[in-house]
Length: 329
View: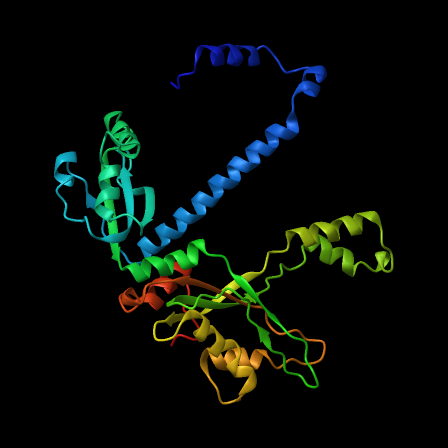
């Protein structure tokens, strides 16, 4: 049974006497309480989405769970210098299936240190696990991990923590070709960069809306109900999705130079025979009257040149996003 402080017990007993009156309801600061609940649920949803993304990566490489034997034995594991994606799992006496308790990308702290914190009863993370084992909430505790390189860790950071930057384009002047306008502030240093484009997803009309549009008796009539339904439909439309199509490694050239070659050179030396990402960007510069080119986005992260050659970066990103990159073949 959950324990409550003494003052909370009094509040709970008062709640059982009956429903509040209208006067009592007016005194409750509903907007503030509602805003707080929404803010908390939004933060929790963001944490859940990140963890689900990490779990997806771990599951996609089909790692086996390792049984955690004892607190003493675990401290002797030689994982001190590894960076990794890791997960903590558990099962119960009722269900043998292992479920995730936690998953994390250990890119700033070595894996050994992070795992010791989760299996050390003196740490907050370890105290949670030990308590659940002692209270027989859990039967066994497991862990799994995938070792990653520094460049792969930065690649995952690029995907999960860095926002897309939209690329503006000029209006056609004397023809049907536009030019991309790269933003300032692109580092003159080595690193990783990604290019993506916007894919708009429209939901089909609901059966109710289709029936109203096909009803001949309502033809030419616009009432409040129709306007309300159309407004609701607009709110329910799915937001635009940015599709990754290219991952670049700025190792020989800087990030600024690589992106310049993709976005500026193709408009000056356009060729229909170009293939790959440059061909895609060049074709996107040719626009028909009244038709806008695809919205293009970039993101980048600085990485030291010595680390860029280590790891399978394209496969790492493809596992994280769940689909192949179109122009990295």
